Image 1 (tube, rainbow, N blue to C red):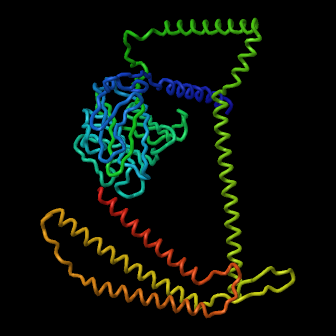
Image 2: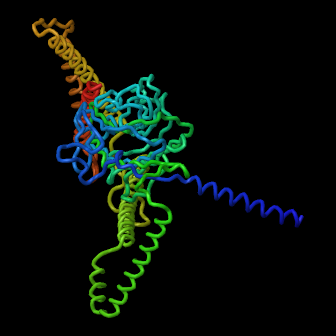
Image 3: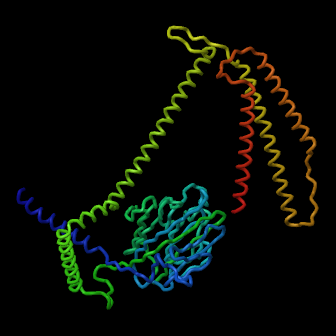
Length: 505
């Protein structure tokens, strides 16, 4: 057994070394491709053009970003590379901001890698439908009403499929994730990698300014894209609108080990090691001279140290921000705790009053310890029933008025549509007896007034010695009427808003 263990350990060590070697050799060579990238400052030239890129539609290029689609209705724009890529594997670092004043945005932004350039005012997020290649959509509008937006999804197309807008491409999604990328304090980021037929998307939500807070959105293997394609970014707005800004896009080509394409500008490994050694020697020499100068001039060093105290390092700034955020969180929790205690206290007092009412009345005055509480009579149950029935009558009348207003509005829309189609046409009379309906409403309101007056008289005839906290009947009725008016106004406002929103689609 001991010999078997001694033989087994070298085998395990061999497999571990082989695994580590295979992992280390799988790391690809990376090369920045400036002809397929743009970034600020001086992103656009004086004539408005972006080097190595071309844009159209409603896109606007400035020195700091490219606004693919502005926050106006029915805007479309796109920007594409002028030349196709000459490498097979790549990584895209996309930094963008989608901001708008509305609670819901539309329509979204798209990243493209296709065999040919798309349109600048197409039907799919501002670009062409039936594309051949990859489209990664940052969809911010919920077309299928499943409450699953904003959503990030990857869609492949061979040039024959039509994108399913009504279902947000639900049957065509290759992979995706639910992430909110609208109205973030910092710019949102997406790192898209395509290496050895594996597509990976890392997403940065824009809640911090750190460049390392990425999370995996999806990873899909066996993805085959056409070679020598074009990179592009497009965006579109509909009835709702957002600003779709791309701050920069950085492209890096990935090459497997041993397949790196060399050019005349690449230095050899020996020369690179020589230059690195010279740099290290120069840095050591510079640091040594700095220390000698500090020893010879201690007073200047003291002044410099005092001057450096005015500034903070990156770690100090990060710790200060963390402490500030924790302090704000603690203050908010303490405020919520106080509010919760207040709500619990009010609830306990309300329960005690309800229990006293069930016993036969409400306690009055201050009760000394050892004395029985003195209870007074309050509003009777039958009077409460009368008030509830009156409120139900008011509700029914309000529903009748609402249905009448809805009917009038629908028929007015019919009249306006007929007038719009034929301005010279005569308006046909409507087969509805408005006078009888008005008389019916007037009779109902008179009955309601009579019921309210009777209830008020009954309540006034009751001799109730109410304390200071007792609610009068008039105030209760006023509160009920105000509540009904607010409900009617809110329902009419909501119906109007829904009707206006449906006109855009």
